[in-house]
Length: 172
Image (tube, rainbow, N blue to C red; front, side, top):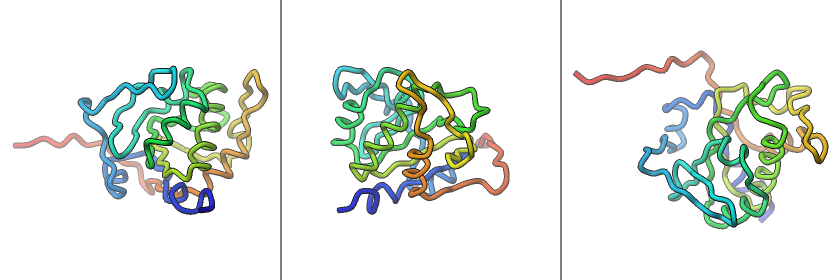
């Protein structure tokens, strides 16, 4: 199997990630009771769900001390990943440190190479093709935004054409 041709390319970049958008792909926000603590190698990772789908936040997966080895260990057990709370990668975004973007780059590489389906969910815009989109630097050098953009260009996009209003449903 050629990487990126089966599982990975079935993934989506979803903004803003409304229940209707997620539901169209059989994804539903996990209940608090589904939260799990995983230890793929030496690091503990709190995830929102770890059943058929690994569902975790950008902050948990990329904002802490996770390594490529952690991502590879998790990739052995989960064929579909949902990463929510992904901040906008545009240069003006204050969310997401350079090290977090580097971890995302490492994670995307692992999922691409293992041909794992990836859903990225965020309020957006989640556009890695924007000039200067990941002009962040790490101690190892600049984050390779072009590489992330290339990998993520294989994912379909689901974007709201009109702003969604979150409406609380109440019973009567």
